[in-house]
Structure formats: C-alpha cells, structure tokens
Image (cartoon, rainbow, N blue to C red):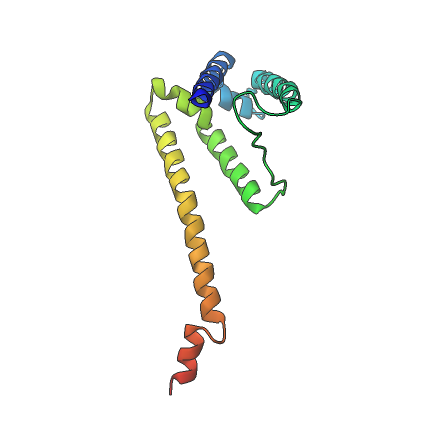
Length: 163
C-alpha cells in the first residue's frame, strides 16, 4: 500500500510540474517544435532542468543499498539501440509533433478534455492494445512460416504424398 501511495504522490508532483512548465499546452509544445517558424525555446529549459534534477536525484538514490519503499531497484537491463527502439521513438515524435501531446500531458489534460485530446488519448489507448497483439501475431506468423518451410513440415509432407 505504501508503494501505491508513493506512486500516486509522484504522479501528482509530475502533473503539477507539467502544468507549471506549460507542457500541458499543445500550442506551447508545437511552438517549441517549430524551429523553422516562430520557435519557442522555453521548453528546452524545462527539459534541461528536468534532466539535471533527475541526474542528481538518481545518483543520490543509487548510493543507497536499497530503495526506501521497495525491496530492490528495478533498472533497465537492455542497452541495445535496435529497430523497435528507433521505430517507437519515431512514432512517439510524430505523435508529439502532430498533436502537441505526449502521454503524460495528455492524461493530465483529461480534466478538461477537448475533441483533439480525446482523439489523441483514444489513439494512444488503441496503440497500447495493438502492440502486444501485433507482437503475438508476428510470433504466430514466424512459427507458421517456419513449420511450412521445413522439409518435414506439414506442407512438405503434403507435397511428397500428392500424386
């Protein structure tokens, strides 16, 4: 229960930070991304501040033998820059550039929804659902193709026994 409360208050703090910094305003985000037009560099300072605070806080936290509200640290183990990582970053960037929202500010803005926000959140939810389904489908296709291409597979046996 303690970890749920900590996660809740961390989310509230994150939401307040998004609101104070202007990250919940899609026009401000799109102004930051419009480097060829009327560019608004203020979000670069927000991001630099967030990265700086996180870098210091993470270093301090990792000096402890274990986290305060957990039994162990849960750190990423994969370090590869592969196609799924690049594709995901590109899709995230396209969504951010088109709509002016990323998932955090979109969830915060649900307190005052608009048609554009509702469309973004619906697309985000569908994408979240579609990813595991597409991965499962790809595994099934690979298994099916792998079985049918083997000489002893069902397709190979059918070809050998056909007149």
